[in-house]
Image (tube, rainbow, N blue to C red):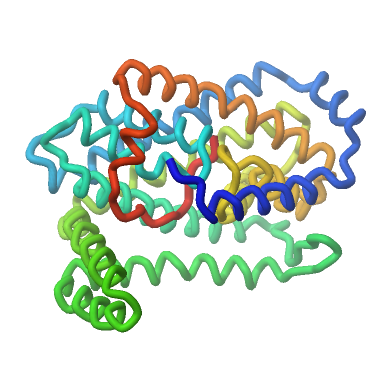
Length: 348
């Protein structure tokens, strides 16, 4: 697997975020908070966080239904998801984005890699739509903060959130335009890309064609709402995990705050980072909880403990399935395909 410039940028961003999250950190107070934490609630929090991944596998089957020759069993989907998350957690440059569709295509021969990649791209688009909508819902909380201070700079949160919640509308319009006018839009892209690079024209055009094929789910309203429903459930489980974790550490905030914290984390971890989003998760947690008056040490303690504990189960599942399948890193790296567009990822 190649490291590349994204890996270097990821390390830099992670170090900057770690500095921000822990620059005024009281380690003695953090240790006391960790000792006093309710580990029963924390355990339930980790269970809830891990349940996101089977839900993602089940949602993936619904995305594949319109294009797969026959219904895909849950087992291969779950194993592919676990392998993909494990790879993202231990390797740079989001290696899991290719590992997940590759693992499925390797186990289910009737689903070629291009089809699997296209379905994952659709998966990510639905993630973006639902996470941004839930971020918008978080603004309904009566105590929603108007500003956010980062490094002594104040930002108007409401304006930022409104900008992000406009994204689902743009995405839906773009998706349906590609569903109903694929040839015209792909041709327009190729005309533009051809002026820049013939390689970009060919690879980008091929990727858009596969993506358009994967959007078959949008042609049927029943399938669309089924995928939307599974996606909504998926992104409501993580706030539940956060809320249980907050309770475990005595962080008292309204339930809708978890949607805001989730939205901020998802936006931040979409940036390049080290494996497992180290630093980015903690910085986003400290900033979002800080907007509600939670002190840096307590927010950082929750973020560190939750991040570590939720990282372990899915990484072990993925490593087990990876070894059982006899896969190798070089094998995945040799699958030279266009990258899946980066978008919200469930932190693990």
